[in-house]
Image (cartoon, rainbow, N blue to C red; front, side):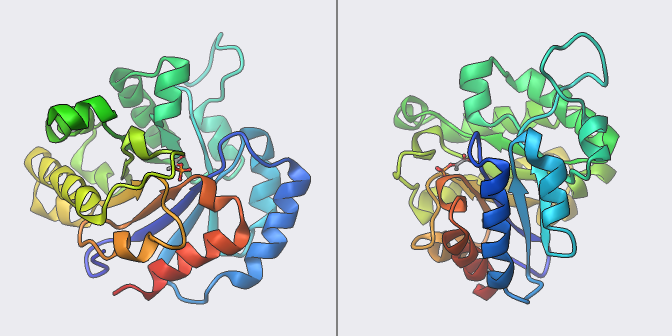
Length: 258
Ligand code: PEP
């Protein structure tokens, strides 16, 4: 992390977990555990149906509510989908875009990711753009090239002045939900390479200010070491965000690092 230049953001991705009553219990448990420190922003990506209630439950806390997905069109015949304007109107501040599970199960591509980034920005939602290589790509030694490609396509057409609203999340697919975390060195190397791509696409000031998260089996035990990497500015956390105590420990680790 480098707090002089950029925000630290810890985001929990609940995926398809937690009913409304479970969300209420979590909010009651998390609230007293949130440190008073202002060093890190906290985001919770809850199932879409629970967004309005989650916004209400976390009102007047440091927790911003996020969506796990957004559609790229602003309205129309897209059964089951939600537009960025609908989400924004319910109090959504961030949206995960291009999570590897959406790419794997719902056919999302780098090009739909780019369209969704534009739709979110247009509606006033901050995109959390996920990129990450497969195990095969890592073993072939093409990780950095592949991530650079994903970042370039995701950001195509995004003007410099909008970049302060973008978060990038490096999530190696082989580390998501597997318990197999990237080493701090592996994660740090890729996050640094993402910053270099941003510098080439925009300039050094934009690259220095962009928040880059790591995601992939981050937990209370390994968070501090990952967050100590200079180019890792937070985490996108799945499994370990489901228990308030574990999530709070990660938030506190981010607050303690300098
Ligand atoms: C994720 O869903 O983005 C994620 C990183 O999951 P987990 O922390 O469970 O690996």
